[in-house]
Image (cartoon, rainbow, N blue to C red; front, top):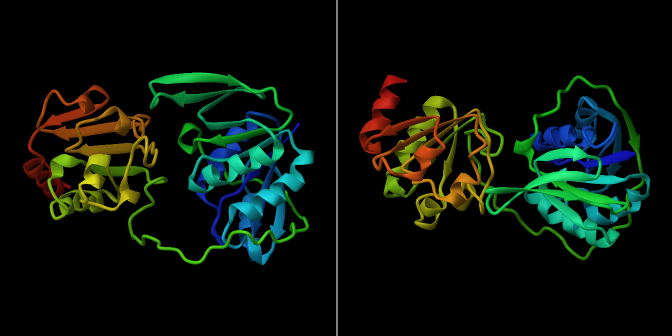
Length: 308
C-alpha cells in the first residue's frame, strides 16, 4: 500500500506543512512517496529526500508547474494515481484548492482536514468549529485526503530517500497565474510560528495595533488577529486566526483583547500554552486559557514589553 504526499513549496524551499503531512502519511502505510512538481525545483526534491519516513521522491519538472496551478498539478497527480492507494496533501490554501479537483477526477470522496489516523481507511476530523470530532471511514479504492498540519508533529529531516524523475504531463493551459500580491514581513509565518500574539476588537484601532506588534517583536512572534479585528480594518485578512482564517497551534498563543468567540477558538485552541489578556473577567477566552490576566490591555501590554 503506497501513499503519495503532494509537497508544497515555492520551487526553492519545502514548506513545513509537508513535514506534518508526511507524519500523517506514515500512519496510513509504510511506503510513503513525495511528489515534488515544480520548475527548477531540484533543491526542493533534495530537501524532500531528507524527510524521515519518505521512501522515494517523485520529481516532475516543467515550466507549467512553476505556479502550482491546480489544473496542471491535478492532471499530473491523476496520471500517477494508479500506483497509490492514498493521495495526501496539507489542508493549506494550496491543498484545499488542489485536492477537491483530484478527488473529482478520480471519482473518489475527499476526506478533509483530518487530525488523526485510526487506520488506513479510518480518520478523525473536526466538525462544528471543532466542537465535535467525526470518525470517518472511506471504502474508496483511492483515498484523497487533506491533513490539518497542526494535528501532527513535523517529521524529522534525517532521511535519505531516492529521487526518481517522472515525465511531466501535457500542459493543460486552461488556467494561468497573471499576478500575485504577497504580504512581505520580517516576522515568522503565522501558520508555522512557535509563538503567536493576536489582537481583537478590544485593541480599538489600526493605530493601537502597534501595541500588539510591539509585544510580538519582543517575543520573536507572529502577529494574528480575530475576525472582528480584521472586519474592523485594523489589520489585513491574512492575519486572521479562526474557523474562517488560519488554524495555528504554536507553543505559546497570547490573545489580547479577544473575547473568545467559538469561531476564533476553532483556530487556536490546540496551542500548547494559551495566555489571555482581557478586561472582561467573563470573556469566554478565559475558559480555554492556561493563564489569564484580567486587565486593561493598554496598561498591561506596555508593562509586559518593558519587563521583557
